[in-house]
Image (cartoon, rainbow, N blue to C red):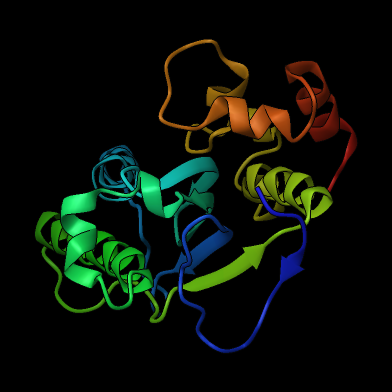
Length: 198
């Protein structure tokens, strides 16, 4: 994992072997998630579309937007059969995967809720993150997002974030080892979240 923060106003390509803060919200006053099934289905879409190309470090979903921290896999870890379609500019492959992910969830959400049209703002926001101190801040910020928006008083009780998955020993699609390594240990991870209010 790399070690500094980079943010630009222009639309960045998602480059393999780089870490990104990915976030987006619903258009207007719409919501991305209105039922437990919506949250669950979004996570299923992450498993299907994104996990072949990213390590998921942390995430949080709240009714009208989401945050996730991902590490794009190195070129030699990406699916070769699919990558061959983008031999001239392989970075486009990862960007297309994210586009497919958002489109798939939108179609499913629209069908389930009898709506039509776009659901997410376009383009989705992405910031390249390469500073390990900022990464720990960002993970804490992501997990505390429901408190920031007044949805709960206890961030660890929010069902739709990666916090419990990271501190648990149960199987998870989140890269628990990678997330905890940024803090040193599970106990330091927990302490950091309790002591640092964003």
